[in-house]
Amino acid sequence: MHSKISLFVLSFLLLPVFTVAKQIAVLETVAQSDLLTLQEKQYLTDVLRGEAVNVLPAEQDWTVMTRESINALLPPEKVAEECEGACIVETGKAVSADFVAQARVIKFGSSLAISVELYEMTENKLVSSFNGRGANVEDIEKIIKEQSPDFFKKACGSACDNQSAVEEAPIGHQRVIVEIETDPSGAVPMVDGKAIKCTSTPCKALLEVGEHRLTLSKKLFEDKDSLVNIVENNQKLSLKLESNAGSLALKPVMPGKFDQNQAKVKIDGEKGQLGINELAPGAHKVVIKHPCYDPIKLEATVEKGKVSIFSDTLKRGVGGLELEAHQGGKPQSVPVYFDGVKVGVTPFSGEVPLCAKIEVGDSSNRESVLADLKWREVVKVVHEMKSSKENPVAPQKETAKPKDQKKPLKKRFWAGSYIAATYNDFYGTEFGFGNLKSGDDYTLKVDGADDLLGNYWGVGLNVGISGLYLFNPMLALHADLGVASRRGSGKSDVSVKVFWDDVTRQPEKSDLELEYYVRQINIDVPLALRVMLPKSTYAELGPMMSFNLYSKTKFSVTDVYGTEDFREHDCFNAFELAIVSGVGVTRPFGKTMLDVGLRFVVGVTPLSDGDDSPRTWQWQLNVAYWFI
Image (cartoon, rainbow, N blue to C red):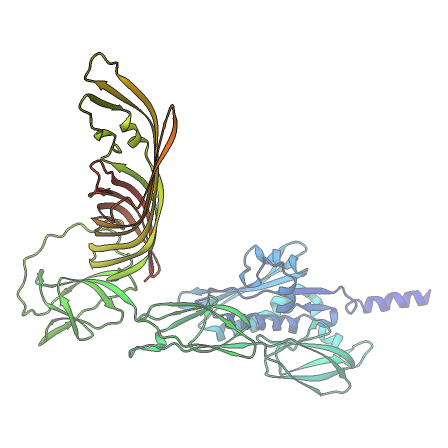
């Protein structure tokens, strides 16, 4: 009886020691990328996780999950860095945590504000939270360290208050102080798969004598897993970490005397820098922007232990400028200078290099013009002259302009390639049946010859290269050089009647079935004047020269006696002149353009020397890609 009572009392006294193992997950701190860097968010997360380790007693089987263990347990579609709101509870359940905590940093006025929440997973309820404000990240770190002890105690209750007593009176194995240091420092240690109070090396930890598995983790370094034997107090463990990173050296050449510090670098959406960037092995998306140059987008592959170098020359960017100079409300005609070089007079419209110094006035009295130039956009500026020695010009009535001024600025010359599907037809012919001559004693009459032309049609293909020269934003010259394949065929029933001058003879009639087939291969050279219309549309008109390389015709005549074929090769003239007209739309794609247009081609000269020779009648659906 006494032994049973003693066993009950002993079990009651040891109740704080033998508790159910519990896990807490501290998720990544949430903040906008332009507010905190990735490194700052991870550091604040590590500080909050370290405070959890300090408060929650490992001796009572509390485990603070590491960043790596959380990511390893998450499903592939979940990313811990992107989790907030209702996702916090879902993530906690996904990693089998009993509690989950997360900090969120926002911009509040001119300072930073932090809010931290702790959720219990069994009942999905908020059990603890705190808030604070600071001027910078260092202030936010102090708030976390000050508020975290009471914050995390809500998870373990009175058990946390008994922590020191349990440590001072351990049951079983002896504990000693162990000093852990790494090269480099800043690694997070775990012992036997559990977090300890030591959250960043170098640090000291209280461990039981004996063999333990020590795991060290640090960003951009290989995890180090070692078996260590703890034998004495103040034992020192020194371990060297192996780098898992490669380097990306961003050293673009920037012509001109512009401030390189104005360059902004993004690597995988996070802030980077010109110079050396240490990154994990693999492919990384890099964007380099500078207010004076064309933006650069590239994908760089980083290998472990190697340096990848980007040293391309950046190209000076251009914008569009519509500049007017006024004096007393009246427009003035004065010289315009870019970086000291005269480029025209006001009113001025054209390209301007980004970051150029813009001036107006004569050589003895120049004034600087303030213009917020935009890459590949048109900016309108009216400069009020302080004094004018130029002759004013009469105010001009403003003409209507497209509302959309933010369109890509066109270069003077573009080149590219095109492809066109064609619908082929003829006009102005009866294929010789309209010119059948009567004899001395008879007259011929043909019915149905028009139907052969009406039934004739075919499709073809045209491919080649294109050039476009812009005289100004409204007028351009468009030229193509392409190979055209033209096909067509027609079929009709024709009646040929013979009427004799001798009335005693009866008229004669022959019913024929005619089939006509044509194939041509030409070199087409259209030269059209293009007029730019609103909403990126255009219209064009001009001559087209066509050079015949190959032609073949086949004429099949079927009557009651059978079918007879008449074939000819190279029967068309070597040169044909036509008129081409069309409409279309232009769409920019970064530094390239795409045209989609519809053309109508009508032949001026006949295809052959015959009196009833056909002329071209053609529709074209063109797609041109301008990339040079």
